[in-house]
Length: 165
Image (cartoon, rainbow, N blue to C red):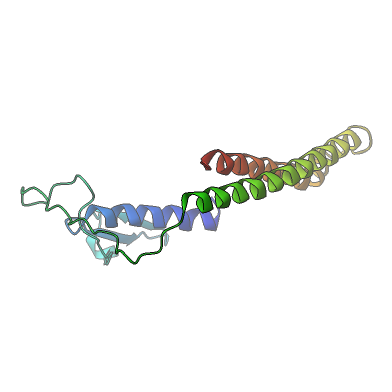
């Protein structure tokens, strides 16, 4: 797991605890090897410290610990002077966004085709000339990563386009 994935997973984990409310305590424990573990039940309280996680109150639908029903948040009305976007203007903006994303998708599909072509060329070269298989893998790996990157970009752009009204 890369550092960015670890940071994201940890922040998602901490955010989920923050959403539970003040009734839960989260501990950061460090074992003898220096590995960190986050838990709500510390195995060895001496090697753990309590994390301060700000809470925004109980999650929607969760009952408070005292057994009473949660108080409903008052509905906040939009101020009358709040700027509003005309439907036609919003539709125009959505159309512009769709056009931009479709242009990016076209570009990304061309880059994907080129990356696949380069990968195929590298794979055809490896069959005849290189005897050391690890060198072949090392040489082909950047081309495979490039193909994967463009495949992911195409998938993400298609998903974004499907979300537009």
